[in-house]
Image 1 (tube, each protein chain N blue to C red):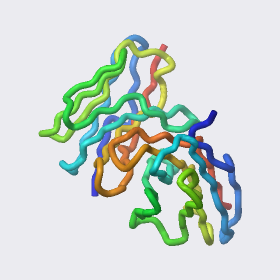
Image 2 (cartoon, rainbow over the protein chains, first blue to last red):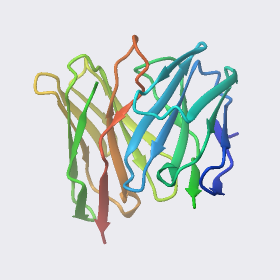
Image 3 (tube, one colour):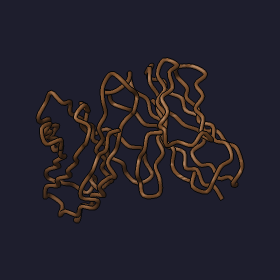
Image 4 (cartoon, chains in turn purple, green):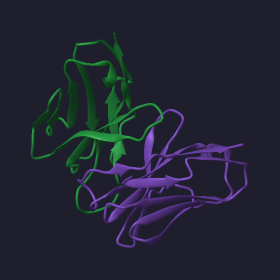
Length: 113
Length: 114
């Protein structure tokens, strides 16, 4: 069974639209994350979510909002999409904060036209 | 916040030779240093990690060394094989307090020449 899953795998949309990416983990982990990987392959943390506490990377525009209906899910909602939002978005989870292996989802390739 | 520098950005080695990738970090409070391998179009996957109370760790052909004083750590791959070709990322994080996630280096594209 897939440990961390994301949907959709590919997302093509126009500027100005609002879209969501879903993430689910079946590992029983307490912490989930969203990372953005840009065209140069640079991976950067966007959000961490642990026990209903959200830690936001201050560089992330407020058009991005994570939503967690329960411990196993952390969805990413993006408003007013811009060309620069095109990237691969990875969800990840770990047992708890900090020094533990993070398990990554398969990624969602977002293309904004 | 933490800053991780990784070198080289591209590394080409002959099959069977060794490969070394180096990283430095800025925050002396960081205490967890994983290495991830990412094949084209795939997710990053952990290949080895080291904690700040350990200087070296080995797993078959892969080893990682950590120098806390100098704030640098390295990945060593011996007897390289074609399937080792991928992008490798080093990362650093702080256990316990805070939730900054992993701070990644910019990646090294490892090419194994047959």
